[in-house]
Length: 259
Ligand code: PGA
Image (cartoon, rainbow, N blue to C red; front, side, top):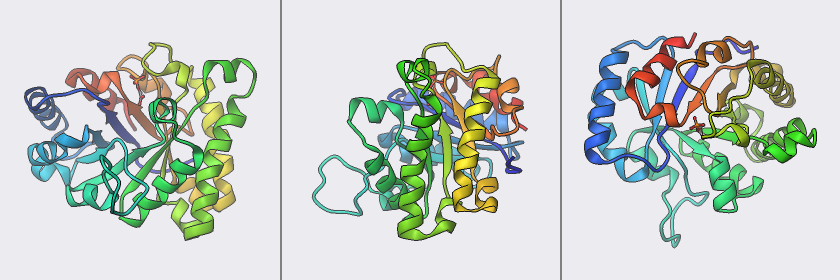
């Protein structure tokens, strides 16, 4: 079981505008104040990173961190449309989501791509939030645990091979069952805890202290009503929140439910 401070990360996905972002970030900064009871991050669309950094001001250093939703596995060069980890770092970004199921599904990202992105993010001093999750068909076929542990292993093995065991301690993992994302169907706390415990066991390959240090977030229709029970599970160390992160009152309620 992890003893880490919990992390609640909002994933805005492809939502927002200059006006809407300003209203949302101001409401969140007011609601959270100088000292959140947990770590808080906002994963905003790349064009708005500068705007949200400016809106957060000092809060970005203190209670609300800036996050990105994706990163190139490459350091620089002829990769039209991509954004490097160093560029994100330049904008004060602390976390970056890698391997979200929407990227795996719509952009064909493989486990190897996700591992390379995680490695690149760590090299630039960012914390990758590595997403894993099974589809409904995989769960119904009894393969949920096998699928998510294989997704995690791909990243852990790559990091151990290229950067050593200690690098693994620098990641955050997010378990996001694909069937629960944006569907209003949430994994029950017991279902989520079972997978989180399996993920924690896999992290022990990189050592007991690493496994305890890595935060494992739950994501998939987390909302103001179900957050407290999910976040009370022994291996759930926070949440990756999509839809409910777009409404200040809902997101603040989730932050308030964190330990
Ligand atoms: P959701 O999305 O909270 O809208 O289900 C979570 C995510 O995809 O990160």
